[in-house]
Length: 481
Ligand code: SAH
Ligand code: SF4
Ligand code: F3S
Image 1 (cartoon, protein in one colour):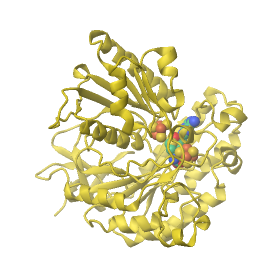
Image 2: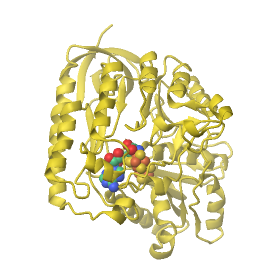
Image 3: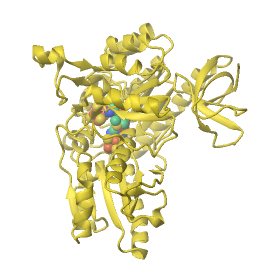
Image 4: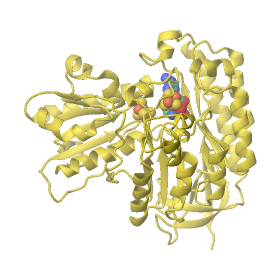
């Protein structure tokens, strides 16, 4: 799920800079860190800040006072990369005024383009892939010494499990905790397996410890992050293996996702648990039962389907059919009858016919998603789809199909939210409404945003709110005692 591309999609993508913070052992240099892409990237930027703080770097939210500018980048669609390139032009304008400024590219584009940035484009000083952040202080020293620096080595072990991220991006209420890195799924359209490397699970003890620390620091919601959380498996090591292939001893000490959720949910009953992303091929009934067992695990699942047609799903190498996906939806309805569901959808994948597109719309009718992230297929260099299949759906057709998907989604979102009129929900307050200082906003267990009058309520509180109105994206209500 992409934080910077929320709701609708393929429009201007915005970055977010980490807040500024002074550190006791300051070396007098300030770092500006801006992030694009998925929650994993935002979470990684906080790990980067933590690594740099230990070396005495302060963070700043102001680009013009930065000695070092890092942009944590996304490669998922062409547009995401274009946005970053525009930002690099902006940073370079600042650099003209301040020639000592160091510009570094982090994250997925660093991995995809590697030293191309340094050699051909000469617009950056440093290129660092997602598994090499521990090396950042050394790499900066190299640049200080007059060289360009690059480390894009991907790891089979790195999970940054021992690094407590500095929570600079958030609201002090909700936090992300990575539980896996990388992805082994090889969906044919996707760059992530190339940019993030092999799938690894993180030691459950370090996850529990991080959640404990968040609880002590007053956080009220934790989102467990991974490209495919359902395949989480720790067995003493974390590199992805199938449970059936573990030794008896490894099986004995193993923790799967359902078991991890059981543990995380018990750390602090006042902390809500969310997770993203679930994968239809791996989401077991055990996971759903774990959700049902714990009141503080939110009643909401993000379950991307990408396409409603089995031939297209096969070409995408998603590992499930239309029927299998529907079976997973039926399981959710059976075990968690009130659960809200959201999805990711791609329009115009290679060779998709009009009829196959209709299968996507009919899947939407079957599930009636609360909301979706909807994208036009964007061919990515070196993916299996790029090598095997022509990107043959004309842009206008992709756009037309996307527009139909968005229109249907808006109708369903509105229908789903209308069902909430008159209901009362526990809302975790996340902030003051952007539209009015007199209103607060937060989310209910279904991940729906609710806006209500501020009165004397505060950010971080749980408030019972009765829903009175709705649009296609938000609920409005009033606090009740
Ligand atoms: N791991 C998650 C998805 C991560 S990427 C999962 O498998 O569900 C987030 C979403 O971006 C994907 O679900 C997909 O809908 C979209 N996406 C990925 N590659 C894309 C591409 N080449 N073109 C268009 N959309 C893409
Ligand atoms: Fe990409 Fe597929 Fe992995 Fe998701 S599961 S990150 S879509 S390869
Ligand atoms: Fe995330 Fe974009 Fe990388 S979606 S994993 S930042 S390509």
